[in-house]
Image 1 (tube, rainbow, N blue to C red):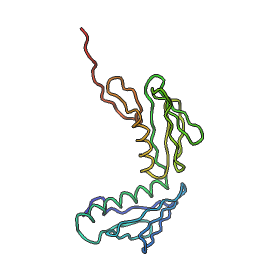
Image 2: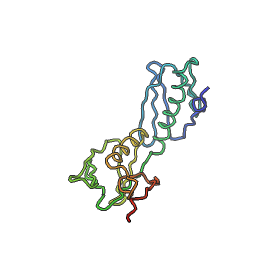
Image 3: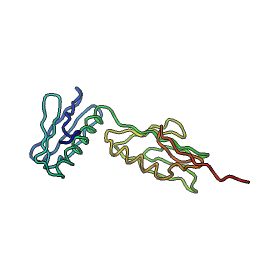
Length: 180
């Protein structure tokens, strides 16, 4: 049995969970918003007093895989509507900076032109300084994906450490060429 899949998901007080048996849709409502997701047909969901328990119908490889996956996705939904997920990005390098204008994020990262990203409606960006931004939202997948898209424009390089990196990320530095 899946170690992750068999754990129960405990629901905080300010979160409500409803499950529609007909179309296998689960709806999680909290103080920060509402998330919806369809559960796989091989998985059954039991809503108890203040916890969610998932079980699988059979012991085939596909249903074992989906058991842990669906449990992890539901856990992230419950955590997201209770407390938002956030990621912090830092621009490291001379002239590298972030700018936020309405629903656009402008990056000055050493190219001849500024790079622009349209900020999704369900995410919020807080500009902590010129070189540091914090992305937050209730959907962990969307927060991580948007942060990865920004970081992918200029990943940190190993010689000088310039680029966009996550807060707390360690860059393995390489020694440069030795001159004679």
